[in-house]
Amino acid sequence: MRRSDMSNALVREIFLAVGLVVLLLGSMFLSTGSFPPMVVVESGSMMHDDEGQIGVIDPGDLVLVINPERKNVVTFVEATDPLDDNFGYESHGMGGDVIVFKKNGGTDTPVIHRALLKAIANESGGWDVPGTTLLGVQSINWTLEYACESYHGNDYDLRIENWVPAHEGYLTTGDNEDSNGCRIDQLSATGQDGRNGLLDENNNPVTAVKDEWIIGIASTEIPWIGAAKLFFSPPPSASYVTDKTWTMLGLVIASILIAPSVVEALQTNKSTEEE
Image (tube, rainbow, N blue to C red):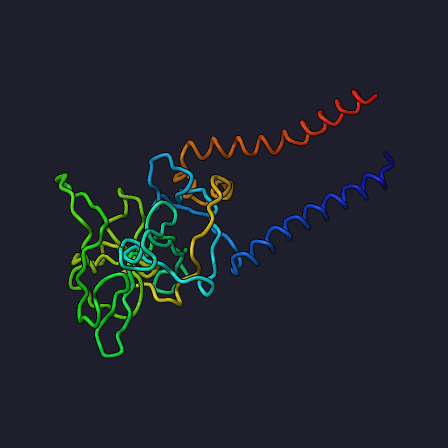
């Protein structure tokens, strides 16, 4: 093959690759209404299992993010209330939606956690909490069907105690029982010191998540692929990725590299048989 032909072939391959990437990103943008249409999960705060599992959010996963203008957020209490229209709804292994939000609306790395409940200002004063019987209350007290375990091994349900919201918004938490779970992000809502909960970039306790702080709602999970980004990210991002995820990522990469040779071998074998 002449050098000019090789150059033309290379240019075609590059244009084809770029075109496929643009087509893929464009399709995901049209599907989600968000750009970028996906996020890479960087921590283990949403894990259900030490080695991770498909169907829940683990470090190294890619997660498509739906524009919040396209979908209403379903909270955990709505999904677990038999009288609510959203009863039984699950996302990523538990009741309710998982949202991606900015901590106190800041510029720090966004958080991807589950929406537990939402406080809404009542027109007549006080607060309403959809998915509960609370209407127009001055302070929010509610026990969620969310199992917790004390240090003494006694099980109990997560309880919101004497919470007076500073504004409308969601209480959130990660699914990981070891690091988050009943230790919700807005810890003061459980009667504990909020400084021990999630903090923003200025070391201020994170308050209830306003609608305008929500970047999107977690949708389809693409396991393992995002670990490639974390491998090149500053520490400690890669340390959160499990051995199982690294193994599966390696198998995916190996399959991609081997696939062209396999296809070529099959085509060659077919041509030989036809002759």
